[in-house]
Structures are given as C-alpha cells and as structure tokens.
Length: 387
Image (tube, rainbow, N blue to C red; front, top):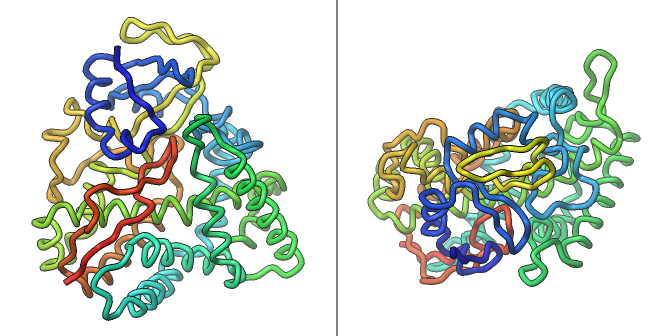
C-alpha cells in the first residue's frame, strides 16, 4: 500500500517520486489519513479545472481551509458569482496598470540588494525575495510601512498547516484573525480617505451599479495580502533554488537576461510553489475504476500534473528552452490566478536585478527547511553563496 505524509518535510523535500506512483498506479487516490481524494494526472486535473459544475470551489480551495473564506473570495466561488467578482476585481486592478509598479519594483530590488553589498552568503528568502514582495504589496495597497514585519509574519503563518493535527492550528487561525482585523481597519480608514491605490479601488469598483460586498472586500483583501507576500516570495525563492541547482541554466541567463521569462515559465512547470488546491464534488464521478461521491473533497495536485510525462516530454528535466505551454503553475480554468501578470513582472525584475549583481551563486544547504503547508511548497530559508 502506498504510504506518504502530505504534511511532512520529507515529502516537501521531494514529492515527485510519490506523484509519479500516484499517476501510474493510483490516478484517483483516496488519501485516507485526511479523507480526501487526489488527482495527479494532467488530463484529469485540466478536466476538473474546466468543469466547475462538478468540481466546485464554493466550499473552499485551500486543502486546509481558513474560516469564512469559502464563498467570499474569487478563488472560493463558482460562476455566476465568480464571474461578477472577477469583473469587479479586474476593474479595480486594471486601474493600477503594470507600468505604474515597474519603477517601485526595481527600486525595492535595488534597495535590498544594496543592503547585501559585501556579503558572501545570505538568505535569499528572508533577505531578498520576501522583502521585495512586502515592499511591492505595501506600495500597491498604500499600507503603513511600520507594519511590514508583523504583516509579513502573519501572512507566512496563514499559509501553513499544523503537521501534527493536519489542519490549521491555533497559530494559523490567530494569524488569520489578526490579518482580517488589520484588513478591516485599513478598509474603514480608506473609506474615509480614499486614494489612488488598490485597496481604494476594491472599495469603489462598480459595474452596472454593483460593488463588491463588504465581506467580499474584507476577505479578498486579506487573501491578497497573504498571497501577495508569501505566494509571490515562494515563486521567486523556488526559481532561485532551481537556478542554484542548474548551473548551465543560471549561466545562460546571466549571459542573456532575455531568457529570464522562459526560464520562469519552466520553473513554474518544473517546481511550482502552488502545488495543490482543493475542490468539492457536486455529483458522483466514476473514474479510473473508482467512484467518488458527491460532497467528497478532492486535491488537484498541480505539481504532479506539471511532471506528467503524458503531457510534457522528459518532465523531470529543467530545460529553460522548453516553453512549457499549458503548465499549471498558476492554476487554470475559471480559477487561473488573476495576479499572474503582476507576479511575472515582479519576478522578472527581481531576477534581472539579482543576476545583474550575482551572476554566480550556489546554495549552501544540502537539506532545505520548507514552509509547512498542504497547498504550497517553497523553502522557508535558502542560503546562497555568491561570487
């Protein structure tokens, strides 16, 4: 019988052999330890992503869901409400065009790289990527800078799960409550003093007389703070890890930075930080000799789909010339990540600046510490030696 612990550091260190066994032998697998199904093949996951009527997000999209999110955010609603939310959120986001944040992103990268000048080793996550994403998020939402450290700490906690209980524990729930209260205070302040920022746009965005409901604004902002800090930092840190582990790719990029966008896409396929998201079955599904019942929860293992040899040739090879069309590094279907353009731009700038300073780097740790999360996979620390 296949045995693995989705919540263990050992699984996070290398989930791909388990994923391959799941794809080959158990493509619809009942993970008895937590009472949830797992899809591991690319074709099955894409089918689920495009069939929201069967595979619903309305009960939550995190494997271990946070209280009250389900039904109140873009990622936890289905059409038609999802479509209304998406249109309103897009209206708010497009008011802040990408070219408005390019300069602040470059400035943040250079500030934190300047702070590392002369250092031969440093932690890419805590000394660079997380600082850059926090700066960028605080700029977008026009939040008070004195709160940066505590907001970052709470965002990191929110994505975690308790390995012993295999669900959100007291620390994670307290962090979510704190962040919700913090977002609520920001929203009330911005109602009184609106400005040219993303938070103000969420409050005022309107289509045909309809605005986001108060709870939707609150939980959307709370979720975006979490994702904008931890998910984006995770994307960057996994990319850095991939380049540290693949010297030929790193040197090719250092010689020709125009390769960075393609290398990012391959990194999203090869080692996405967004490994697993949840759906709930709205009707019985018969697949691969299994009957999954209406009401059953299901994990869509994006990290496995991106290594499926049925879809990608030589999937365990990191090839920055691949151009991996259709990868699920940002999800897919109606719930494809809405922040992909900002994430790609921020990551591209971060690595243009980083590799411009440090064309040679390697990691010093043979074993990495991982953020304990049932959804995401990224190192909590990535110590690099630069040259």
